[in-house]
Length: 523
Image (tube, rainbow, N blue to C red):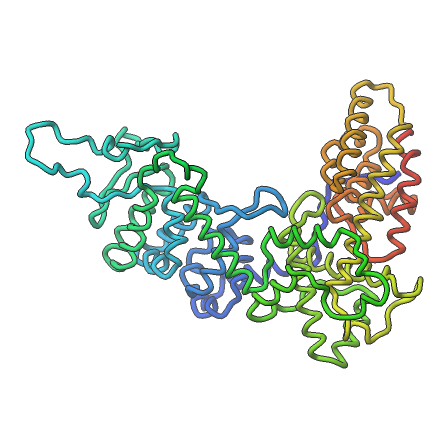
């Protein structure tokens, strides 16, 4: 039996990439180099070295670069393949890093950004009011109105809108450019004040545009009425900012999570159109794919991942004989990689860009091998990709993965668990719960959602557990542990290493493993 380790698999080129990024960041000509770099490279630098170490890099970027960079860095998804959400905490980190480079530099940088984005970020930290609303409108000997009460008047606030005090107990509040600014939260307060003062002094028009936007989002909540199901102004503003980001990213060749999930779900379903003479050319009438290519102003680069044979051979033929078709196939591969990156998970985590590219190529290759109009054990002719698209090949491969790997593994595991006996009561109860969950998720077509319940298998056999998790996955893979079982190897095996399924022979390996699974679990 192979020994399982937790050693992560790291591509060999990873170290050299980190080294090149470090050299780039340390170059004495950074200010001149940065404007010529792709925003994705800048984002890699920030992820590699940390935002705090990249202040000079950020302030040297052009407004266009910063827009793309912030689109990449300020949104997070709660779970792989889910919709992205604006990260208010990360926005605060950006403000602090910018101000650390100098208030004037920070003000110049922020002034060049999209105002709606800045308003969204600042509104997570401060509330803004006109200073004049706190001035008495008539002479009176009465005590002047309390500023805090005036802010809260008629408002039903969340707990996080309660006054924030500094260490001395005073409220965090200041007046800048005729506006009263009150903290919603303590972090990033000093940086925000310094930024607003510099904006007011050096970029007055931008300052007032931002402050008026924040003031609108600081207004009291509307009264409850028949329209109370509508989004409140801050939520509507954030929604609009998110939609605008998705529009920009679509033009850059990215797929939105919602579109990616929809495409992948459609691709899992077997289609009559994939059989017979109807599969004879052109991208299938998939509205998501059509909209993607319509939105993209220009095609992104071809994915970095190497294509698999026979796909590699077919692409080479296209490249040498039809430049237009090769360009189209490259765009299709880019879309497929982006769909996996945005809308899917692997081993219950997000894909890396390289993994998404490799997976797209592997799945297309599987689709070509399993093509219904191709005689068994043969490949399409070399010119096939000139007249046929890779999206359809991917759909065929993705459907095979879902039916013949993920659902098949779930079905076989359900049968196996019915015969597994265990003296330990907790393990026995866990196996019953796993079988029940598998039946539910198999019927729903989502066997990967039984992954957590499958943890009980680790109590019986760790290698079997790792193999099952890989097969049940949203994007099924062949874990190295599974391959070790088939090859009867006894050497150390990484618990995280895996291969994407790209051939019909690997589908056969899945069936052999599932036939051996009862013996593994009953030892």
